[in-house]
Amino acid sequence: MKINIPGYKVINIENLIMDLNGTVAVDGRLRSAVVEKINKLNREGFKTYIVTAGTHGRIHELKEELDSEIVLIKEGDEAAQKRDFIERIGKEVTAAIGNGANDCLMLKEAVLSIMVIEEEGAYSKNLLEADIVVGSSESALDLFLSPKRLIATLRR
Image (cartoon, rainbow, N blue to C red):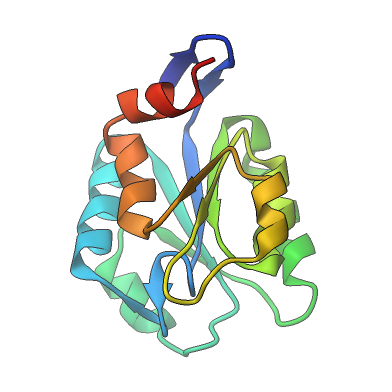
């Protein structure tokens, strides 16, 4: 998806990387609307990744629900692992969605970053790295399904 945002920049997004817990899932559970939106993004040509340390142990179930690649990271220095992953897949064509402290480096590196404030809350320093802040994972995903919303939010 190529978007020209007047007064901001032209961005080309091929990949979408999402933190799991607190971002697109609450207590390890995805809402059905989130599953539908992520799978629709995949059908529309995005490559989606869910990055998690597997805190709630539902990796197998997530693989059955989502068309996304599930990226399991090790506990300890998760922020650096997420940053390194986004650099491997191409930070210049990757958007990121996150909420926690371990998402800060990922949000900083992405071509477009979205901070989500769900039930878990959000790490306040992510405000300095995020391009956009939304109140739900559904709203974050809708920005890619209705890209004129990105333009309306970021144009200068």
